[in-house]
Image (cartoon, rainbow, N blue to C red; front, top):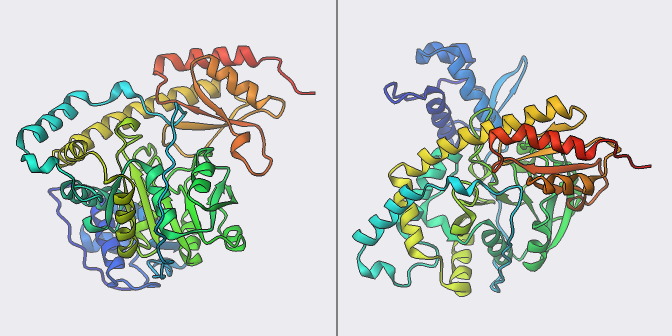
Length: 453
């Protein structure tokens, strides 16, 4: 075991998060080497004069993120595979973009967009910025937004990122497309099942999608290693459609795999049962490319996202972005920077997180009470639920019935590369609490007596 130097600001509160941040930083900068055994939670709690539960919470967070491993009888150790570097493949110069359109189960409740606070940020931008700020700028994004995002991603997503390694893009789809193009990936592993929007995006970017099965722990890394893929695209925070979070063991295996990882930080803002697990990029910033956006947290129509990449790749993505369309609209970028800096973004997330949790709880409760034969899978997070249907239900018919009731629903069959039980995805973000029970009751009526012979 080793002594730990952990600084706490007791007036600030959030002691478990502070301990986790201190340990995470020590691991990243090498002060805690791979394999180092940490003090028992009771001993560290005594040293820091905090409750044991606070230390346990910090350890559990870092285990979930893959920084630590914990085994009964053997204690808690620094993970052996954190941040092992690997040389990325050389960039490719041509560029193509593959955007998508349409309403989906993953869409947020747009009536909750913070119009007044966003308007205040836009007004601030228009009344304070010099005229030169509205000229062509850095195609990688305005400096103010990249600085604010770097701080936010470090604080909230445990990312290891600097402003100069961030590129502002028009959403995750564009960020992934640009990343694939500059990497020159030929065979890209994707999760099976996966979003129906991923396959056309991957192909348009010049890569061949290689399906790798996912289970209750997330992507099967052993199957990935046997797939012959050059890189992998993964949604570890909350997989679409299954709603599974990548387990700590699979995180460690994925880092040990050693290939290039394109991380779609999908649904990371909305974890209801605990604090969100930190991103994979924080474990291995030299070979994980992180993509995120405000499409779920604010609105898809803003078309604001980001890519965090290793230095050489970040420069290549920035160049490709400039060759494509010279960068994102600057007024919206400055407005988002102000929204982040003044705390408006955090306040909005806290409010929407509470409301989305209420809506998910209402839908799941109604399903459990009225359609107990449907199994709700996945963690308590995001904007959708994954529903395993009774074997005798017709999957397309069930999704069509849900859509006819005004629910955003999709059958899972078209998302699979291998056969699986009937299932559908239902979005709950736009289903008010008072409507959930009635919608499920009507779905039960419409599906009653249905059988496939």
